[in-house]
Length: 430
Image: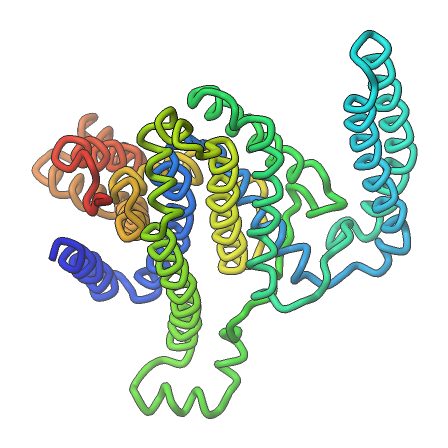
């Protein structure tokens, strides 16, 4: 009964926030908590199923957000006319140069001539790529840079963008996995972190793709807009009939609609993962996690299975990134910080229970709750502690000023308590 009790406690905490602060705040916590739970599921697949130490989570989350922009935003016709075709041609040339270099390396016999031929192919391909790419990018970014200055997307429904974001993250994970999964665990962690930073740097600087640090705003929604609900006579009458303010009620209804979508995705993922974990494939993955040498001796292709689970986990993180961009309504590459998208997700997995899907979901909701509420709770505690102190006291001022740092203290305290009293997590995997 530990699982239902812990989830009931989590629900009670959400209700307490709704009653003491506001239901908008409580639903914001629920929505981001559900998205965080999905991210934690992705990391749990990699670590809890196969023992892969991936600390490049933010890169895959960012690619999911990029997929949301590329699919759901309307295309910028002038930008496409100015240089869209040339950019696509340049990208094709770059990919072709890499493919030609790989083919040259494989087909030619060993020796200095092979290395020289590969270098010539890469240099020639790079020069041709830049010749085509640079003028096209300048032309695209010159098209109304204050509002667009990028190619835009396909203008499709935003729900379609969620699996596309997962596919983008999966493609990047395949490239990373083919080059880094042969490394030892600590080197794998360094490699994934470095590649995630590269992805973020590209998103920040390639304005033609996603407007860079100028951000893409106005990402379409899968749910109604608040202003549309407020202008609907039937909705206003319904709110007034129940005694609610239509403005506040519209915001709550929209957040509830988001929560329903995110909860449905989370439950589907947990069901699929539970079925996979109980299958022969899941038992094989756990055997590889526990003893790679023994699994390999039994004829299992450990490297291939590691690549498989790395791609699946990254795809789930990319799906969560697309959902988060949809919830925010904008893509902000500068906001993808390791503290939020790597450290917090790992804390969620550790506290919830490594190898446990329900534990990861619980950890995602719980850690996000404390991340948001640490500052209000810390302020209330400091107000209580400093109440007897004289106004103007240096100690009182110092304690009140330290409230903004309570989040980091709370996360460290939660992690220490979990490691001390529940080292396998709140809901450990069996």
